[in-house]
Length: 179
Image 1 (tube, rainbow, N blue to C red):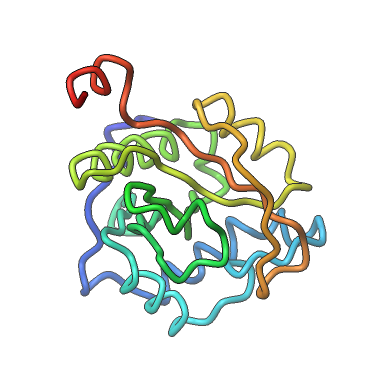
Image 2: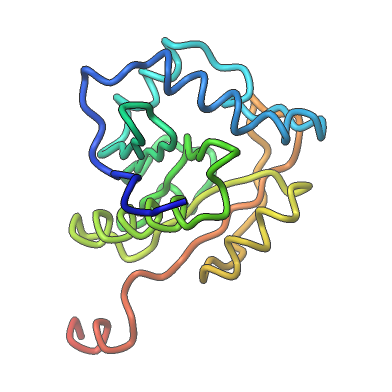
């Protein structure tokens, strides 16, 4: 795959919610076959749109006019049941997917790097995510990207215990300049 074929850009209201929802279902299909009921395995188009609307930014990866990746960045979430997401400088991302045939080509990494830059520009000091504890391959991948364990949480919409992982966006040099 030639990476130049993939364009990553902000979501636009003209983008097909149906295409994004179908992408989520397809990308999370392997996890569903593992018995993990992520919301993205079965959400409808209205839920996809609601999740986009509740974020501060959604990115899409596009190839030949088709949406092949998506990631939604969320700001602090004061009503969250998990204390980590309630912190004012902790952003998190979700609704993250890359079309299975294009996975392992760096598209997801590029989208996470954009989310990190956007979160940092908006004042975040941490970027977090949650995923299924049994999805060990995902937990390990995020840890290789610098995310660390924070806590466990049980969401009402899933059938598994989630793990919250977070990555520090402010380095020691940045922190020293803030003191």
